[in-house]
Length: 390
Image (cartoon, rainbow, N blue to C red; front, side):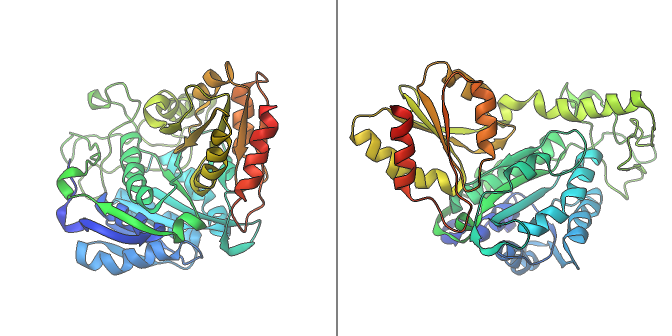
């Protein structure tokens, strides 16, 4: 399915990451957003609010993040493609409804423009300290998909991909930006609508009035473990609840129903990790040292890696574009032959724990922490590379 030309601002632009994400949402067909302003994410919904009148969408400013994160889910069951945006404490407030979206299999995109924390922390300054909250912030067992752009262009591109993954796997998808990427102004090329591929929402083939179960797999699921959807008003009368439920959507308060449901929710993501995970590798094939990073920090690594290479060291960069599910399989492959890993991230050690788990003691893993507020000094990353190379 191609994008609607009405929603695509084709051409070359100079946009910050927040505005580029908004344009990506529009190109992906988003027609509803509910939000509550919070720095440094506000510009995303400001642009949506400005552009929606021209594209046929609706923006509602809610009273808080709790209301925003549940309003979009009501809109999705009404047939909308929906997005909400937040940062810092707002992300914490949205965790309950993130879990509700996973449990009810409601596709939407949640953008988190990360800033320094805990609590209100550093509203205008960057961090990458929500990465583990993105994975584990809601309660219960589940899998999540999260993407991390490194540039305004990727904010546009990955917002579209986030919507496509959300529709394909019928689940919320997170776009984990950071303040630097969100406020960075760069060239963004928006292609014509006929060059933008969109994943259509897979709707039930049942006619209005026919019995429809909101969580029943059918032939169209094609082994994906993803049931087709409907929308309110078509005459299917779907039952949607955050309680453990059966295929009808009716509460089923027993261990057997819990096991069947939770195992399917996890498997529909975990079984397709190879399709979901996207990485960028630079000089990795013959490297002795692998720098693993993501978001703005991956860009800060370049001067340090270039300096080490000029000195004759074989250093590669593995950039996590998909951060969740984690690329543990690829890290494990590399661990069998390299001298070590360097993991700079703008937190005190989050994704590095996943790297350590995948490496499993076969090579040293050196964290380069940063509490947030400013990006790393490349000199610090360079020294970590030299230390691991000894």
